[in-house]
Amino acid sequence: MTAGGGTLGLLGIATRAGRLALGTRAVDSAARRGRLALLVIAGDASRHALGRLTPEARAASRVTVASRRALGQALGRSDVAVVGVTDVALASRIIERERGPAGGDDSSGSPEDPEGRMP
Image 1 (cartoon, rainbow, N blue to C red):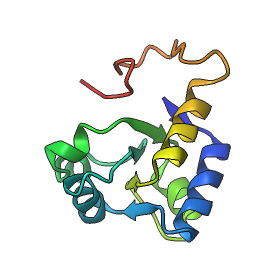
Image 2: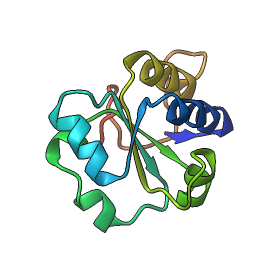
Image 3: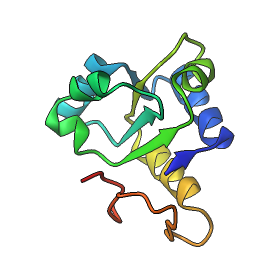
Image 4: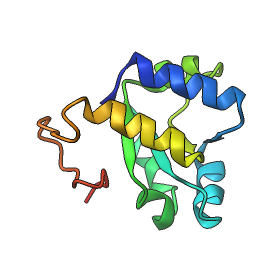
């Protein structure tokens, strides 16, 4: 699923509130501590960046945003490839927003399962 501007706005607020883990190291740390509620990945993130994530981090529910540049701009930083949402309520809100008002009909043809995880 691909995040729109509303999701980027929520992520911008979340970073100021300290509810995000920025970068692969921070995301891995959050996953090891059981605090990773959602993985946000830039659509143009390299396989190398994703490959550096631990299996625990890669197993998290995820959404994809347009680009590293757009994600970074939303967070007040330069290009960002990977972000972890550590707030469960915020993660739920982002997932709900991305699935739309129909409540989960993802007709995008993506290989994600109903839980939002990639195979």
